[in-house]
Image (cartoon, rainbow, N blue to C red):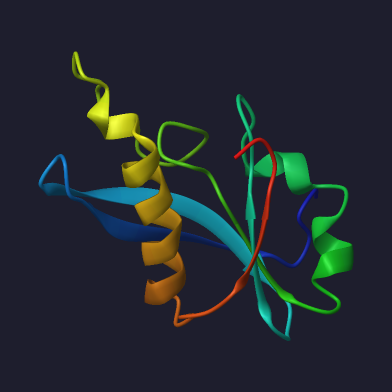
Length: 112
């Protein structure tokens, strides 16, 4: 198993531009300060498979599929593409972390 010992979760976030909730998929493991891992384009959270377990020895590692990727919801795009704007996509992981109980956290991002 790639992410052995990680718990899988789905968190609902509010999409301001859509006026509806979206489901963001993620995984979590570890103890210690929270560390959020964000994948790049065109990957999914699976890009972290070689380092997530090592990081989980010192951190509570959370990795999510960004909206439109992997197992997270994929809203239909409009002509303005606002559903995938940086503002919308930045809001999702902040909401996920808040709903998981983390108001402050470390962030590692690839291509973001």
